[in-house]
Image (cartoon, rainbow, N blue to C red; front, side, top):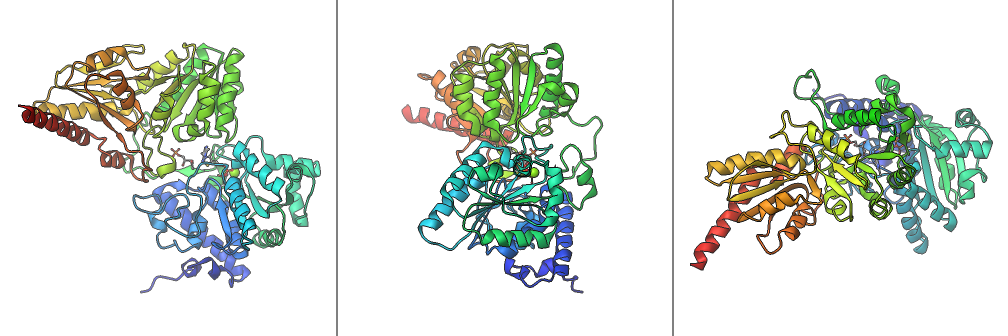
Length: 603
Ligand SMILES: Cc1ncc(C[n+]2csc(CCOP(=O)(O)OP(=O)(O)O)c2C)c(N)n1
Ligand SMILES: CC(=O)[C@@H](O)[C@H](O)COP(=O)(O)O
Ligand SMILES: [Mg+2]
């Protein structure tokens, strides 16, 4: 029996949308929501951002001729509808799986996709560049940037707005204003626009959309050289389409301000006060355990609350991810000391230096991958001034299904090059807790980097406090220097090596900048040293150890190649990279064999 053919089944390319009636479009929107809710519920992913842009995406693909016209999705987590309408409906069930559809746009997947990374606030910069090129070649191609209200709190977005406005390039910027990042969006430009242009709060301007769009030369966008259409109801497909068609005819930069509801059509999402079910974890394969397994993020959250209870100078800054980095309870306990600066990591770092200068003890809680855009601020605002800022760098190392733009692989290689920056890598929850308490006593900048996921069920050889590394087991053939969560696999690899008769010492480095002289002095006495890190193999901790051991044995670099790593299950990705016990042991055996062959060759 043939399965019932749905309208969605009939959409193979965006052109198939053109002939649908208004009723069919409404029915299609319902099918799309059902599909997204089903697949995300089964696999995890970004739920509410996508439910909020169903009508908008349909209208965009009816008005503009992708890929001749360019649709640039900022941050890209809200492109599931776009993927369903551009020939990927059959593959949609592979979303975020190894080898499956990416959770973000992917040029490899489709000619309709452009911006692959999920790092926010970039679309208008890409749009500026493409519009300049089309202008110079008289190419009749429209450039459309779809930017969330959260993404519009990132500084790079303003740089794009200013440049496009100054050049008067015919870019259409669709402001998808659902009032939220994860939490309610701070410093919402859309409110500024509504108030400035109409001296009315956005909520009253929402009533205005019924009167239809009107070009508005005044207001914030007008000051930057943009026309402004809206705000319009982003779920009223007819109005959105009309407004986009009006914008498509304009020969100047124009903002189309659509007001959408994050999670539209899914009651649980609409009621989720924390984050409107922005992202949903895949259902756990194991039965819920009580208590919940402890994660590094939850340990950080608890340790920070304890530190803040002891010291009123402790403040914390997040860049629009309070829940993801574990600050919700802190915010409930110390609302005046929790600062959400929006999608603005560079601002977060330098504001923290300002706080430190004025006598506070600021902590910046941020994903490793997103912190990288603030390297200059860490280096020359925090590092150069030796400011006592603590960076709680979450999601360090391989992170899993979000793929190459989310793995936190560059922090060790970059942050260990900042003079005076202390870098800790805890291997357990107790170490993380100790390190945070200790970092808040230091008079210079400190990084504590830790991975996504649960802490080891038991510490390997609980360590004394302080900065020192610690030796887990004594031996004399091989010295493994483990970084952070790599202590577990390194200790297991040591057990495997010992069954081969290879005496192996394992160090839990704990502090990777500056390196612990005790561990380095010990490592000098071994014929073979290996550094195991879930960061870049070249330029990271292993390179620092090689410099420290210079003149003696050059260490094995057991880490991640300098390449973009795919999406997948974290443990599988780590094993594929040789960062599990078997892989580490195999690398060491190989080095020993080469050493032994070399010794035989010399005789
Ligand atoms: C530079 C950067 N920092 C943090 C994030 C994590 N992040 C992903 S989506 C999101 C919220 C985006 O809000 P908005 O642009 O309004 O899009 P919405 O989800 O509301 O559609 C954040 C903070 C990111 N993608 N990029
Ligand atoms: C798109 C984005 O950047 C975040 O939503 C990210 O997907 C969350 O990652 P975690 O699952 O690690 O919280
Ligand atoms: Mg938003």
